Length: 138
Ligand code: HEM
Image (cartoon, rainbow, N blue to C red; front, side, top):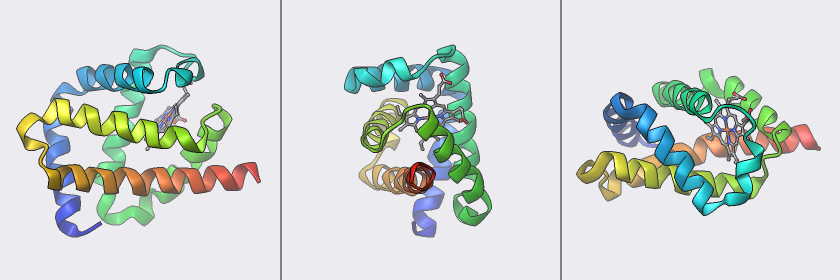
């Protein structure tokens, strides 16, 4: 990711933070529409789950300019996700639901450049999780 892209992700995330609970609700609603087969993988309270997701995105977004410092935590999370029954194909569906949620939440701020920057950020995060998860399963 370029420094400009990192800045775009960080500034637009600040606009999502005040509406993070609503954003989490939108996100899971969209995910379960796009990929109903992922619904049974979630066993806990979805409001709690939404808070954990938002907190993790917050850490990742803040750490985008020093990815090496958050990489071990991201890899650990990828290994845990393998244990939840998450498969490779699910990552693309989650990415799609996330971009859709950002489009809803950001409205006119969700320009093509912002979309591209978020797609790159999610791709980096998901890629590291998938890689660690594959190693854990091997
Ligand atoms: C960048 C991508 C993702 C992030 C940041 C993320 C974040 C999180 C976090 C923070 C948790 C809380 C537990 C933990 O830390 O292990 C969690 C749990 C979980 N995630 Fe993700 N996740 C991502 C991708 C996915 C994908 C692709 C799926 C596939 C459907 C998924 C399904 C789940 C499930 C099933 C749980 C456990 C729920 C439960 O305990 O009932 N996640 N995720």
